[in-house]
Length: 67
Image 1: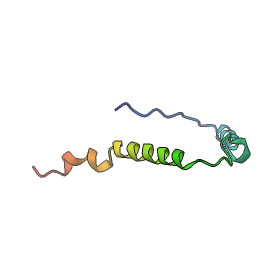
Image 2: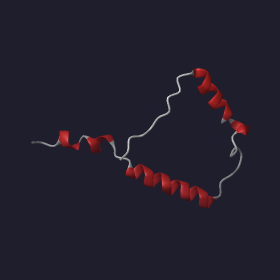
Image 3: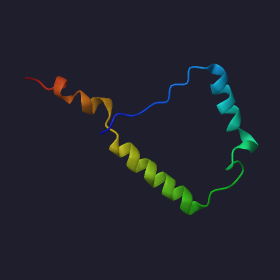
């Protein structure tokens, strides 16, 4: 699996502006209801995603096995 890439934003002013740009009425999806089919698709994709992400215990199984 590829290493996750993070964006490094160190300026607090930039973080604040990005946060404001996504709040309430400025968010293009604000106030728009999702239909049940869309909710089901999102739920399924999130379940599939979280099932594919290894847990911390999966990475340390070799350390926990008796020798």
